[in-house]
Length: 369
Image (cartoon, rainbow, N blue to C red; front, side, top):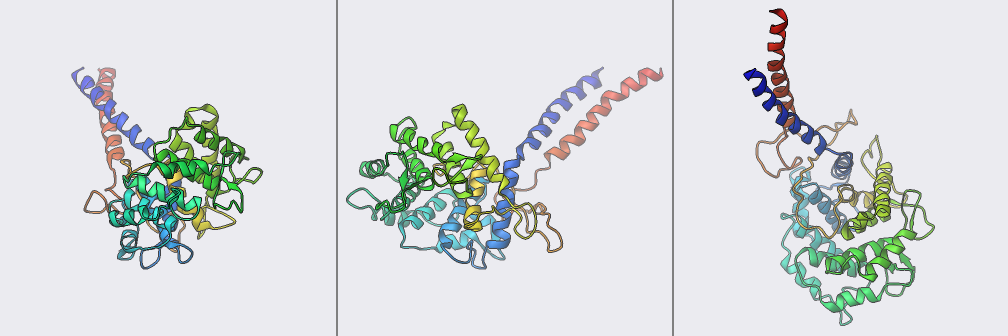
């Protein structure tokens, strides 16, 4: 009887441990892992940057934010001996929006370079009207970067953004309103305002979500009313929902769930681009924001997530199946994995079998007596 009691007390916590460990790996974290794997294995260059053309500082910064969502530092993503952190440490730009993203990356991961000089540079870019840079998109990115770095955003900057809202509730990317409002800019501005202390219940924010509601259809968010969903618009809208925490409303929770499902449905399942997010515009741009969206990290979040999602190694040329990186010998944050492999589920299972065996033996003996 004593052995049964001891075994019972041993089995229960081990069973709970195995269940918790198994639950930690969600489908969304798997989506994020595969997106990060594609970015590293097919898009990282020899100098550590992500992408060969376009705006590599912005794309690399977006990936760093995704790594932070996965509980990883930028040094976890390497091309040979050079890491993404090495590239970001020396990256420079004169563009306000790009510097906003770079500051956001540096404030999210500790190894992407210093923030003080970059923050000062961005603060100096604010005009007398309260706008950072020369367009709304860049302005919002600058504010997000500054707030992530713990910098103060002046009242005139908040007032300027609020004053640029259109009657539809959306924002246009440029001051001249050449292209009309769009959901990408609107999602960024919502997050920038919230990061600056504007409450989710503020009429500016609620009107912004009225606009986002108007671009939702076919299970995802599009760039404008009547347009079909696309990954970039979907990702930024997901982050806006999370930043404002409007998913407490059942209707927004449903839209959030559908938007995440839509995004997962756009992920390439196999082949050379397995893990990438398909987009008719830019597969790279659609994928760099995906890990943070899958892991439910808004652009208002700060620092590295406590819940680490291990990165996957590049698949061998003869197989399309990625395998976990071998457990490194040092910790806590390492290239590829971020932490040593967790053996708790296996040990828990073996201990549980042993405990059940202890329970079974007295019963078998009773039958034989």
